[in-house]
Length: 417
Image 1 (tube, rainbow, N blue to C red):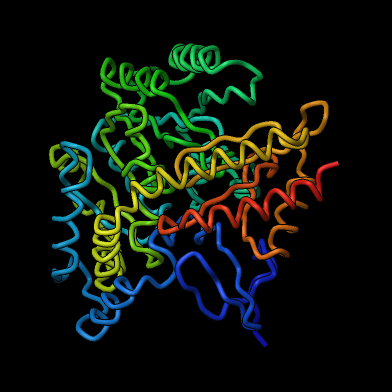
Image 2: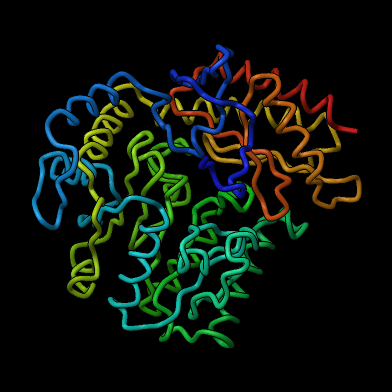
């Protein structure tokens, strides 16, 4: 009898029967408040009627139209609609299936467009599990372990993670930029550096936001040396942070934006956005894929965009995110077991530490499991997996935030020693 790989460990014991909005219902009929959203994927909640209807209608018309063979209306319309929300000047799109594929396509584009071999990533960043993307990932050794040698040409610079260093944000930012310049002098000369790849807020790395000064420093160096600034918005995009794009919080200007996760409310779809001029510098035949731009996924993405705009979900993410972050911080202040609470919009992380300030994986894992037992589904992240993260769908209500915070307060009190 076949079974799933034993390496696929579930974060919760839930076997789902169906989902609706911010809730999942298991096979025994128990309701769970889902603050994982499929790791930030179900942006419009589970089975939003408009997304379901769009997908059902498209299934009856065309399921797959391979987009380097034929063109189809959902893809053309999605391209047009994304042009209305993308940063100014990013008017050319390549579609794939997953975030990792988008990262690898952007890597290929960066190297071909600049003729340079190297890229710089930032400590704690997560960009995917495929070989090139894993080579660019530093949020945990588990993503690249056992598959060496990894791809060459990747250099790692510090991210201004103030809490990790024990500094204020200004000191951490000055250090990170100074070390980037040192990297240029010692490891990858600017004229051999094709791109910076960065998340506007570390995702798997522990939910650590960047800041305006740091991203301005990257932009200044990118402009000075002809380096591309690639913004990995796979987890932070599509309204999740309370702005449509996470980098908007910091006034950043990217050359390339990577999109996935919440783009199609659960259907596999990702994209690379750049200017037509930049995209045209990629080599012929370097972009493609069998399932990229799938017709049903594109129809779901169109419906997702409509729901986000019609229901004001970016604004809701900002308001509910402030409520969630404020509540989580109030809970964190009442226990020494939580050293820091941080986030942007509906991305909130609580970092568990020991009395002497060291990462406390055991208590974080206990809190995540205890929350699941009480009907609140959460995940952990961070290099030491000691950050419990909350990622509710963008449709989450004030009452559901209050429900989650009430459970979380009880959980923290029960596991904190």
